[in-house]
Amino acid sequence: MASQKQIKFFQHKFYTDQRWVERGVVALCERQTYDEQAVEHSRHENDRGYNKPDSTIMSRYAKLLIEGSSLSDSQLKDARKRLMKYAGQLARIANYNYYQKKKAERK
Image (cartoon, rainbow, N blue to C red):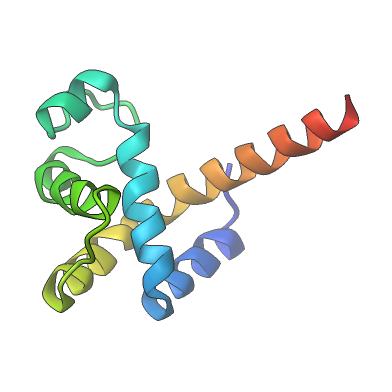
């Protein structure tokens, strides 16, 4: 579970740093199920990746970024605005990755 402090931190980073926006868009895309990734649209309500209203446009943004392109200024502004609601999910991803890394280091 992400704390309110972590959520606010992520939201601040999305607001101030384009790289955080780009990483967030791609990280959420990677969390979509395989069938959702294939059709670029959310099919399941599972707290994984994008919600249904955001899924098509955010999947397009992710595809651009994965292919090495940049988002236009208007796309970046839109992605930044949409990402704010996903700060908790992205903080949970970061927490999970952190603890997995620590666990691996102990072995």
